[in-house]
Length: 92
Image (spheres, rainbow, N blue to C red):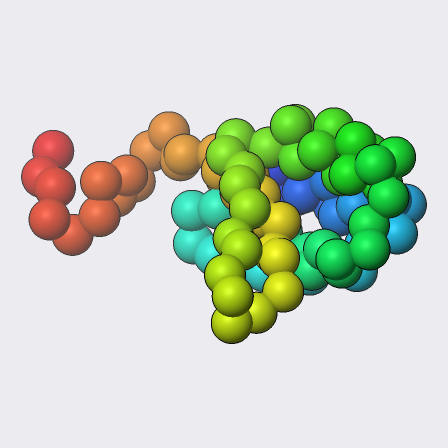
């Protein structure tokens, strides 16, 4: 299992341990982890959740008046060392 996948799964497990239901979604270059944060979340659960996402490459909180608060994190996947690294628009 790649290190990025291990890291993403660990973050998701820690969010679950903090009492949040997390979702993990694989993308080409990163893995996204999201968890809905209920309004009545304790300070302890917030602390645990923030400690969990601090291990990600990027994280944040999406909060609007239209939906619940969503805590998100992104773990980048390793870049291949050979092959078409830059994609079709890049030439060697």
